[in-house]
Image 1 (tube, rainbow, N blue to C red):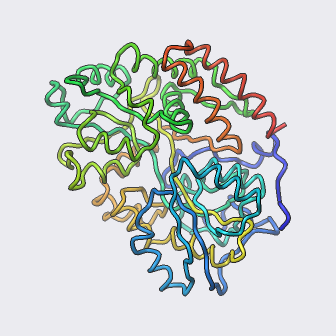
Image 2: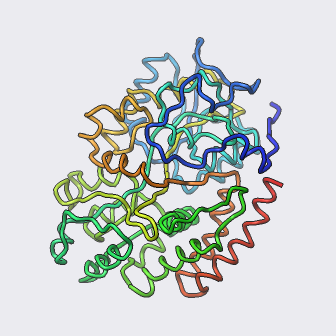
Length: 441
């Protein structure tokens, strides 16, 4: 199969209306909208008969598919899911890259997020979708997870934005108002100091792998009012906001001593979820499924003892990062029509209700988001809606994996006192510039 690799330039990205992350919750893309790839001769359209078998390679985020939804899909469509494999998110990038480079036809559908959609889509390894493949009420920030350079490569399976969670019992014991969240960074630091006691730290995060280091740095940079790139896609790591963000993280760990040292080893949000849910830290900034786990029977916390609110800002009131995920079709799939049926099923009301109610992720459908049952099942939806007033970014690009790798080295050096924050950002900037140039020219 020929590769349909596109030539990227700064001009094409800016002129094409590239979306870097959603700040408007209710923005939807209709079949007549501007985003999509209907102009591409290779775009896959919806409709028509589909049958046979498909294989899916997913991450380990959503258990609902193997716990019943696959069976429902097979009953509704007559398509057989021959193989459904779940793997650790941290292992999937290199596995996908190897699979695609070899034009492997073993898997028809893969999970994706904004960075991989950009990287693998630009390389010609993902199947573009036509406008008629897009659900009429898809939430725009979630669609960004499967899009790059004005081309849609998949459909989202859940939406996700980080918010703040705190343990109300810890707050009360520390003399803090359990119902009042810190609204500024200084208030957050002051609270974390009071909460750090008896061998328990006030704050914990997940910086133990390259993606985690990037996410925690980016979130802090956005809280400083910064942007990762300027309008011409020149990196801004060594900007005032970049250096301030790195400084704030170092201060939490080395100066204020309120950050759990385990933060530098935690590699997955699901592990961070457990640290909080077992009462072993007081504040986390995490994805929405934190609520579901923290209010489950296995947790020491409960709906009555968990607070949720906006992440406190440094130079702005708040900001956050996007973690939406989706499914894409391999360009080398031998049953693309059936694979598209899976993408449509994952974004449908049937799947979305289970993802919200059983796993605690935000829906990708405006209809489900507006359903009162959604907020009843997942109260953090109210904070999600508040967060749309502030910047939410992820900056998924074809070079996201390379950025994660190089930035994490310097973030960790700074956190461990081996580099000053300014030097760490200066070095990261110099290493990232040629990477961006390689892709954009």
